[in-house]
Length: 454
Image (cartoon, rainbow, N blue to C red; front, side, top):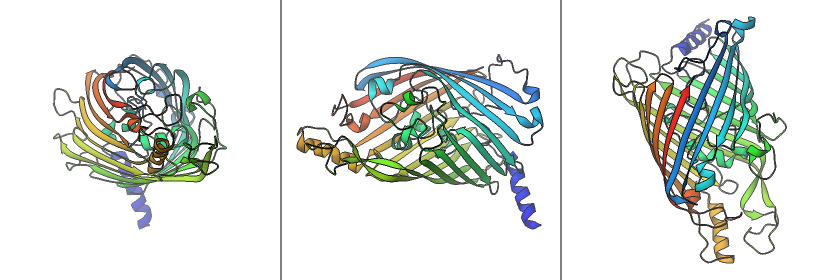
């Protein structure tokens, strides 16, 4: 009986968190698609029946005044159309919901066109297309005690994430560069979600367990950009070697009205059961830089990686929950022989609504580092020895960024931002390809984003 009472108390506390992480997240802003501030011009005549529509448009301009592959400027945009259905209200199925959203992506991308870097400067950068993103059912038990999602899912909104990066425009401040570069097709993250299932168990109001199984290559095997192999997001692949994600998270002072400073730590990792290319050796066991090398890489079985996330509110505006100053730090590692990035870290501060007359404005500063693996560096050294004595050896890519988010009115924000990219691409382009071995200088990137939630 005491066990039942403990579980019931833990479940009830989930309704009383300072920040509700259990609602579907808008990939553009990190906010809930169910409860959000909008311009109020999108009609929702079916909301009383449990059907809610949401639309978000992001438009942004970026330019690199210095560095990268070439200087220039681009404009890109993404329209996100989402629907959330409460099937309990609609057809009487208890605690079952459906969420789906699609992207209409247009414009160029600064990282792919001008920079050739790891820390993609925008979280919406993608090849132009109209693409289905997520489409899943979610079933809950015990007042959000247990939650199961099944369908086409993204992992970045729940795994390896921190709420204090929502102000940043750089893609790696969401789904970090280590997972986007090391996992096939970038892993289940924008703009390609993957078929799978995710289980969340809120053991108590502070301790949660999160696990997921995903198709390991949502675009499928092949050459070229995975976004071209899954152009419309409807491949629905389920037969590729799976990707497993797991995370344990512990939070403190996370109830609404708690005057103490909230914080959280997350420990997690991934296990992929597919084959991964050796970063130095061809299938015949010699370096890719050597004469007579095979055109195919040496394949290694499986891949693993781990991460840690820490976030802590260090100042809280009186009589509020989330306004104040929060800091975050993340770190991750993966084997050097089969991964381009073997070590990753980022950290930063977010200032949220410090002024009473501007309660929804945000400012963030952050830094990140992605280390080129020792095996990839060994390939560069082979090229220097066997091909060209001045061949560049990649080392790491660094990011320094600052962003201010100004709310013009509910549902409309603008974000001027600056990013300084140290050693784009690790300092040089990949040793294979049309631009092999080209040195890339540090890049200064200026941007302006506007977000409209209709």
